[in-house]
Image (cartoon, rainbow, N blue to C red):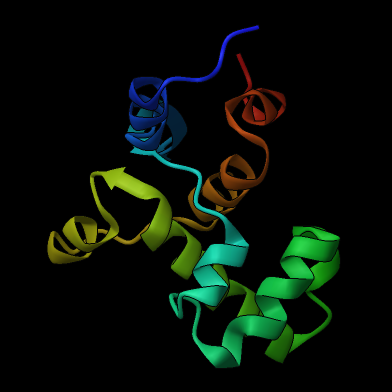
Length: 128
């Protein structure tokens, strides 16, 4: 077993190409995503204080169990957007916003799932 090199870590930090659900069923949306840590996002202030409970629920329970009602749904949605902002490398979330493009609910969920489990977890969601 060899020690992971800094070059390998740098390459990993550049993200992975991931196929998200498209804006229409016939056209995939390929992006480059990285996998930020929810804990580091919270610690660094990239997840606002009012969303920390929602982020903690996502971390502990996962997406399905973190939404209990209207208010928690809103906080979870806001948290998913913060995660997408931290995850999207190319195009960036800001570039999409500037172009007037909003991510779909399914795309936000895919991004969250990728950040927690990597690209292999997304295979179960894809229909071939």
